[in-house]
Length: 335
Image 1 (cartoon, rainbow, N blue to C red):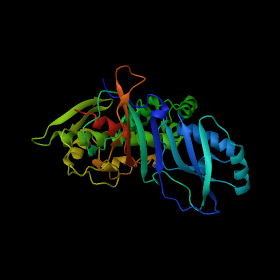
Image 2: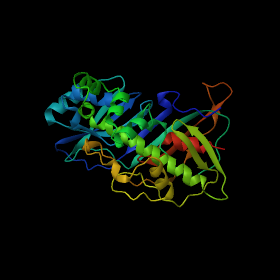
Image 3: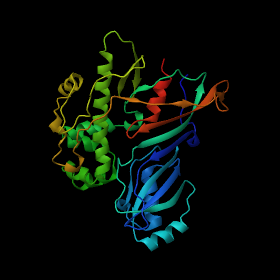
Image 4: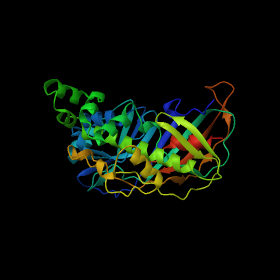
């Protein structure tokens, strides 16, 4: 049986690492937010109501896992006296907020350096062998139902088909009155939701290219595993792979042959990620490390009170932003 992660929220503890210049005053309050088993979109909605600010005036560097205990910094733009009063009155069973200081800039996506993890791994028989190098794949959290297909339809400008697949209420309501205006319907959807679909498609292309690159290593043993979007390939040895595979988007060089082959199969070019009909969701290219070096420390092996006859242990490690702890731990137990 496979190792079990996130059996309960307290099994998965995440603490963001971010550098902020804290001051005694400024237009933005910097708050430390700790949430348990709660999604970030609901957190923002609740805080906006409780602190009497607009949701767009709440900034954060990363969304963090839902089924987990996570701690991170957020910024809130508001009047000092009113915020102080609201913070003193704030109570919620799934979250707490603490004022840490003030600053002149909001916190935006990607502002953090990474995250520290303390994760209870269950349903195991022994500790994994030492490993330092991990393939930096996007994990299943990135590929929720229809995300990849919706992203592909948007990039290919098949807006009618995208609307048929998109169940966002705003789009469907627009189509009732304007059935021949799929672009208008999609424009009613929050751009961050649409951009999430494009990013999922870009991530799928990257995962596919990396898997092919690793498969082509001559004389090296690999481990193949199915996942929701295809097949992931892992090197059996604990060595770095010297290859650069960009996340393809507008403004990037396709780079390696694997990316060029996949773009040809998908009938795409990098410039197709410029979506002029809805410019805010155009997919910019980016650099992403194919492999990352992770120093994992393991606690003592203990009896697992949840899975009879099995063991559990605690893994502690740090990952740079954009890397998935679930993926790193999965690779640690590969054999």
